Image (tube, rainbow, N blue to C red; front, top):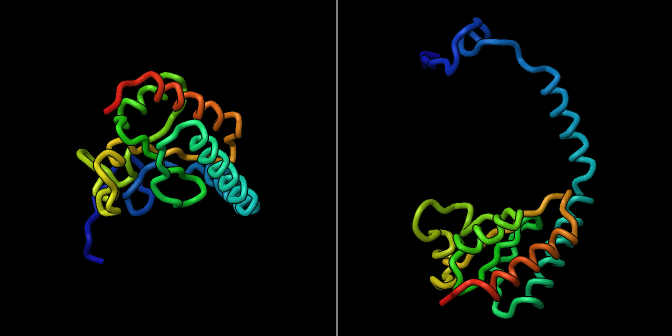
Length: 160
């Protein structure tokens, strides 16, 4: 009451002139169905993610001495570090091979991640940090491709 909100889009008079157009009911119904399916498969998905995460971590630790698992975290994310390598360089190396990962922490914007610093990690670990995310669609074969590509990166790229 008493707050005046400017509409983002102009046109029809829906929602007291705050938005134009008709809601996309087929999309809303599809999202509801997807949420129901996801809820039914939640425990199966969590189990798959944890198994794939552990499989990937074990394979990486066998293939690359010195690789660091930054934290246990959640089943769908594997935060890693290759100390002495720059995460930006690793990210580009993997991207060129069709493998998508993220660098540093999710809570980073410019400079070093304050989250990783607050965890007491060394600058070498922070600078080499990557985040691998998994979905229920990912497979051990894809994990093997990541291991192969990171191993090639370690054997190819300069580091300090």
